[in-house]
Structure formats: C-alpha cells, structure tokens
Amino acid sequence: MAKASTVNENRLTKRREPFNFMLWLAIAGSVLVFTVLLAIYVLRKSTGVYWTDVPLPQLFWVSTMAIVVSSLTLHLANHCFRTDRYPQFRMYMGATLTLGVLFVILQFWGWKQLIERGVSTVNNPSVGFIYLLSGLHIVHILIGIAALTWAVFQSFKNSSYVDSFVFSVNPPNQLKIKLLTIYWHFVDVLWLYLFGFLLYHHGI
Image 1 (tube, one colour):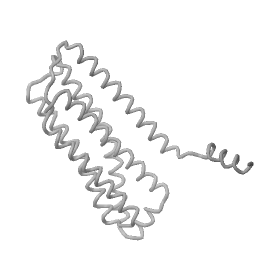
Image 2 (cartoon, one colour):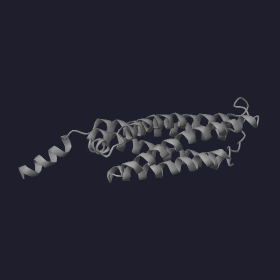
Image 3 (spheres, one colour):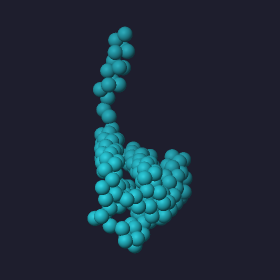
Image 4 (tube, helix red, strand yellow):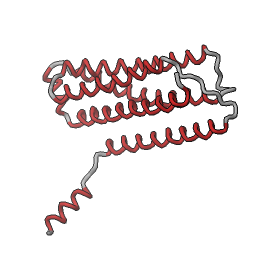
C-alpha cells in the first residue's frame, strides 16, 4: 500500500520538461489569439457596414500545398533521424526549410495580387482581416523557419556519420527536434484552419 502511494506521489511531483510545457503554453496562447480574431471577424461581418467579401488570391492554394508537403517532409526527416539515416535526414530537413520559405514568398505574392486588384483596407475591412490573419500566421512561420535553419545548419555541420550519431543521441538535440516538429505541425494545421475559414467566407 505504501509502495503504491509512493509511485502515485512520484508521478505527480516528478519534474516536467519546462521547454515542452512552454511550447504548449505558447501554442495555447496562439490558438486563443486567433480564436478572438476570428470571433471579431464574424461579428464585424455581421454588421455588413462597408463589408464586401473579396476572393482570396489563387496563390494561397499553392502556398497551402507547400506548407502541407513541408509537414510530410518533416515527418520523413524525423523518421530518418530516429533510424540513423543522416543523409536523408539532411535532405528532408532542407526540403522542409525550402518549402517554408516558399510558403512565405507565395503569401506575399498573394498579397501583391490583392493590391493589383485595387481593393483597399480603408473602404473594405474584409481585406484588412485577410492581411491580419495571414500576416500573423506568417510571423509564426518565420519563427519556425528560424528553428529549421538551426536544424539544417547543425545537420550539415555534423555531416560525418560519427558526428551525426553523436548529435542524434544527445538528449537536448532530440528535444529540440521534437519541439520543432510539434511547432511546425501546429503552424501547418493552424494555416489549414485559417485558410478554410477564409475560403468559406471569401472563396477564390
């Protein structure tokens, strides 16, 4: 009986990984911010004052495909990382970084399409929400790109099999790759939700 109590106590009092907790706390905060913004969007649209739904840039479809594929390449990179296939790990991490950068470029290009249509945020707040929601998401993507850049740099820095193996079995490095993966999949799912929301209200 005393042994069971000790086990239960250890489970409750054991030290948690602070960085993992901080990441999930940040994710929860981001979800809250976007939830509030989407609620404001719906309320503002319901007034109908100076509101006209503007079709989304077609390039948003292409950027969405890029971010979805980047989650797949990151998943493959993790599999290679765990199975000691380091050249493939470097290839897939580089592909993920490239697709992340491509996503940002396509998003800005999509903004350019909106500008070329002559629509303005002054006389149509719906356009302002497109910029706000996609722009805030781009900020999240840039954070992920910075982390991916570190991972790609480290993978090429430790290019020999021995250095790669030492890097892969280092617990702090394993944790960083794990947190990076969680975060990148989060921003992927977040964009899919935002894109679906905007697509429903605006169309293409």
